[in-house]
Length: 162
Length: 107
Image (cartoon, rainbow over all chains, first blue to last red; front, side, top):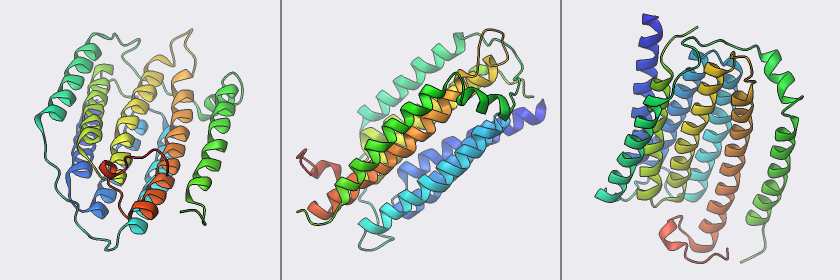
């Protein structure tokens, strides 16, 4: 129990610090490293709440594919890879709005009862049976969204149009 | 099996959403904007996973939480792919990926 609390605190600190660092450091390549660590720390949370399938999915899709895709985007669009980003002013309005969201959601979260005080893990078998059984339509819908997205992405980057 | 309170995870998710919204409002680089959107999206996915973990074993509640989380991870990856395609097109046509300069809808 004390180990769980320790793991939660370490992971929460890592997640918040890496998310902030990713958005505030001025070198884009460093941003990619921080955001990769952020994705890994979230995968740690999924393992903590006994959802290993989602943890592996997070590691594979986010820490793997999305990070490399973002790095590719940085490499293609920069003349110099380690060029610095111009500092953006930290106006009071965005900070105030973000704090408002946090306060409202945190007060709402404190009133939600948990059904159980214990996490009960589910087997990967049960989840995959559910994904290809009762919730199969959702996966089908995801595929139907992905196909036009792929076509649209190819249309956007195709050669021969100025 | 952890016995941390559900509210701890929800509070963390609220903080991450706040960081994401802050990034979306302040960053002008398209790639940083995409990263801020991903941070906000990950806070939502964390919510689904945690609710699924705490309510999944209660009779009458199925595996909706993890199932929605799987679909959302796929959606977020799709969104990054389309976003980067827009980044590449914008970079080729304007020579810059500053969102403040992308004033025309036609790419």
